[in-house]
Image 1 (cartoon, rainbow, N blue to C red):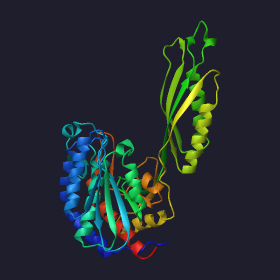
Image 2: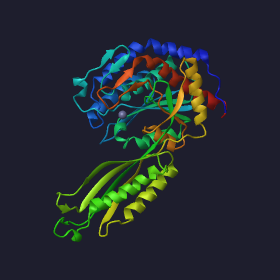
Image 3: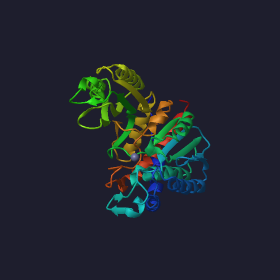
Image 4: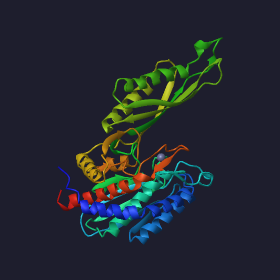
Length: 396
Ligand SMILES: [Zn+2]
């Protein structure tokens, strides 16, 4: 189906409101960047959650806290409207940076680049969500049922705690918009690879490597045979990538090794592919090349793939139509990395990712946000929320 025509007037009113708040956006960005929010630093991420919650409450949102003892608590704010259509916006408040990073590396702005720990991953995404809700309120648009902004605090750990919250919220939503930055300024992401982790351990038997090697069972040799077989899947094109990412084994150069261990990262495009990989890896773990060795295999799917669904073309076309109005020609892309969009898509909720303002070099000291993309990208997200509500109210 073709998307509803864009309400040009509304888009430009939203854009004007968002543009007017750009200085406030930067002030809020400075607050977040000045506070340590590493995923392991619960007090820090919880403080950011409390700060965001107060802002959402001031907007008139219904708020919720999802408390976690181990990880940072997740928070949500929901704006209620008078119409139909329920959208979910997802961003994260945690970063990969340790305590002390905020003080050592304060927000710096050079031209249109803002730099600092977690500035784009994902302070700017979280603030985009907040300002989108604020803009919708400002222009008096309430022709939707509900729009929820969820900010989690364990995304950089793979969302071990918030995954279920995200999935359960997504289940009752017509669309999920993930506020991660795209890989390029003119991109959006409708598909992401799934991620599988494996831990393969081989046990053998020690022996003197010179005097009586025949009494040993070489665990490293066995592991190498197995890994070669695992890599074969990627070579044959059955799977996106198989990367042996860590390897350990042995004691000394003159001992036949009795143990070896490898960790493997696998990226897949579909759940069916993931099932094939899993069956194949388990068969390899059971098969023996070096007699006398044995192996165990742990692992499986960490993030399901964010697969395109029947609604994906509609979402992409809607984004492109809004982009056109904003003077950006948006390209739909596939990304090999994961995001919380993997969790919203797997429960069947139409999902679009890579919507937040553009930035790059995440997880490095070079991380930056391109401030010139804040207004167009937040207008895009606001426009998508409107498009989702319109679509629903027209009985689709
Ligand atoms: Zn990250």
